Amino acid sequence: MTTCTQFIVARDDLQQSEFVDIALPAADALPADGLVVRVDRFAFTANNITYALLGDQLKYWDLFPAPQGFGNIPVWGFGEVIESRRPDIATGEILFGYFPMATHLLIEAADVKKTGLRDGAAHRQGVSPVYNTYSRVSGDPAFAGLQGDYQALLRPLFMLSFLVDDFLADQDFFGARSVILSSASSKTAFGLAWLLHTHRKPVRVIGLTSGNNAEFVRSLGCYDEVVTYDRIADMSADGPVAFVDMAGDAALRATLHRHFGDRMVYSGRVGLTHQDASPGDKALPGAAPTWFFAPDQLRKRAKEWGPGGIDQRFGALWAGFTESMGPKLDIVTGRGTAAVKQVYLDTLNGRVKPRQAHMLSLAE
Image 1 (cartoon, rainbow, N blue to C red):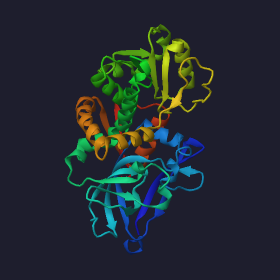
Image 2: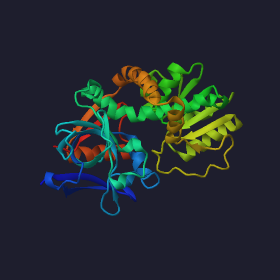
Image 3: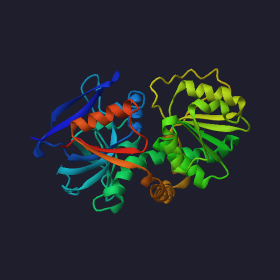
Image 4: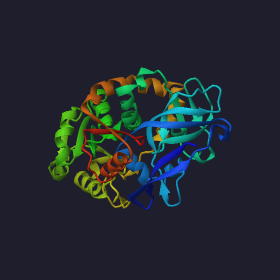
């Protein structure tokens, strides 16, 4: 009998974590259309901490059940089918998609096509379909080796960057010609900065970051200006600005709104890596802070652009982005329970250097 090792965290205290072993059913006991997938490797970034922080609100905890009071943080990665009840899905096939931090995943294959499939398990149906879809990528060089690492580390975040960029452009940047990004060293932020810098001129892109990360952010080459958090008061307050909040830091958001006043024509919240974020924004001058909800923009463009329209436009930008920005990252591989726990805690507590990008596996 195959045993699955899972890394789970306390939902009310993310500093607490443990490993649990769960027995998986034998091949002849699998449900109809069942697959057992061995998780090969997965990316872990600050975005996964956002998944945990919003686990209840956005139902991320529902995707991969865990013992009472605990949750399994979803991650993007690769798995190999090792048992299959589907004649059209062979053992040895490689899947790319959303996995638990675990050694294995049981999938109830549905909507099987040559290019992919969906997990039809009942507990997974309350979230956006993108989180239940798996691409069949065996033999595809775009998902192999280093390119595969880029897919797991950057593709989901760059899709978010792509949708924010498209939303801002669709709104003509709310009249702003400068866009300020907090957490400028984060992958979602510099993905958006790259899109704005290379395709939305003359929009000016300003990155906010800590003093420790400023050198890295400048080295990216996609920000017109880099400002450390302690120098916000020195920023020019002339002209309308749009703010894309990748951090969710309430104090920072308030400082920016008060500095720019009515010139803050858009304030959108995208990330939530700061755990002390507060919704108390009603009294701030300038545009009221609002959440950017990516599925809304995705549905809008899917309707307007038609079948394949999003993938075509995204794909045309993805190749240029990875060619330009991928080499600026140092990909660090970690295997085993100790490595996974260490990277999780380092990411949760802000100890990961921005240049580092982690690919992990629970297999020793």
